[in-house]
Length: 286
Image 1 (tube, rainbow, N blue to C red):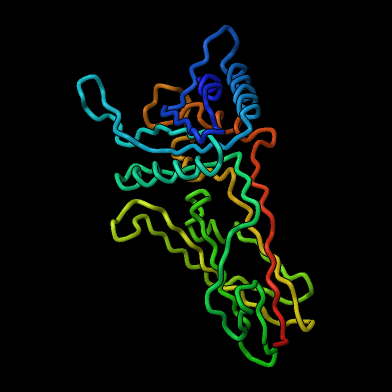
Image 2: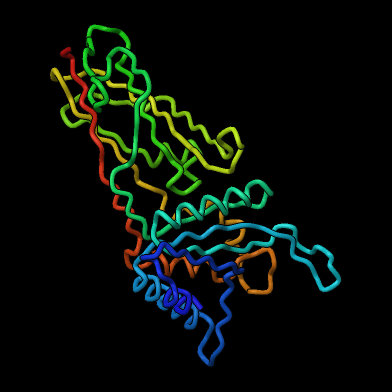
């Protein structure tokens, strides 16, 4: 099915494919199930490797009902698999996730095949230094001051996995270091998320992390601060309630074989997050 979808998809025209499924693989054959599942991982890896574009998978929940209409599981997992160019996939991922979140059915999303380049950023009002025009340069830091030079770095998150809105996940992903001997401490991290924006109250995700970068003990008259994001590519923590104990496909509360699917997607270096660092100049000079 995935091969047929990909073969018919015109990504150059901006087309995006969305497969909605419980994603439970039902191998049939004489070989042992473990052998068939190992082949499944290899097959998925080959399909996605040949596709070479972006993929996002959203996990959601629904009521699972029996033939009489009785709810026998109120958190039965199912998935949206989105395929296409990364900018289009990210947009559709956010729309679907927002709708699911409104209904209280959203769990998490996970991405592969994205090439983000440099993280986007802007700055807030700094302390004990000032920004030079609109450049990533901060001047006038006086080392005699008892306080640190604090730069407020603002990082938009809406293009990344939604798990990045959790402060502990973002803090782990955020990497910073001085290049010439100063000391840098990551202070407060404030993450603001808006799901509805504008006077017409339309669904539109905006998420921004504001990071306090504290620079002190500057060895030279200036230093360069390098920062980057190491995205949580295979952080399955919000999926785990459906992965752990998923031993057979008839369990409506578990996602049998979905972890094997993700293993196939991520196996062999298909992830292309390839984040490139940004740099901030801090100087004692005016």
